Image 1 (cartoon, one colour):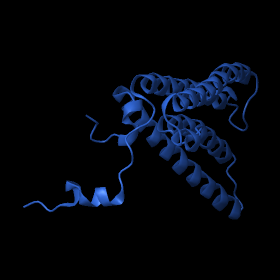
Image 2 (cartoon, helix red, strand yellow):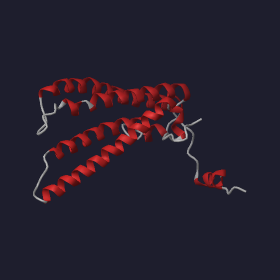
Image 3 (tube, rainbow, N blue to C red):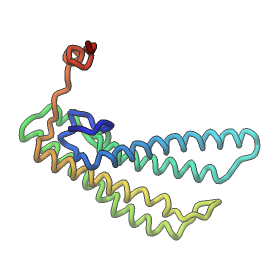
Image 4 (tube, rainbow, N blue to C red):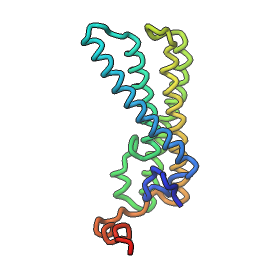
Length: 190
């Protein structure tokens, strides 16, 4: 049974753990906040510069929204199979060849996530020696997004690998438009 407000597409449900659905929803909301914050601060920066009174800290805030938006979006997209994933090749296959391609693809993404965690953590630690202007906030505040995102991408790849090996990677076939229109979803109640 899927959650009433789940963002998971039914044909991908077999690859997902229900207990991670709230995390996906939080990531999607944070993506929206980052996008809205980025857009708002850029607009504010343009307006204040046009009026001849630039506000310097706005660029720092804009950069923060941008960086966190990218890495939160990467994690959310990895859970949704919307990013870092080559589906066209695997969708054309079946049986053991599909299992091998799906597994290989997710293992490559898992390796990239591991690099994000390891090297992102190294950057994070070194970021305490450099500061952003004008607030003098350590650059580590930006670099923290990299290993966090990598850890989430790794979690989501493990989730998909385990569930794909258990239930198969091929989901339910998408319904044709005729099946959707003929279903009870579009019938009037008596």
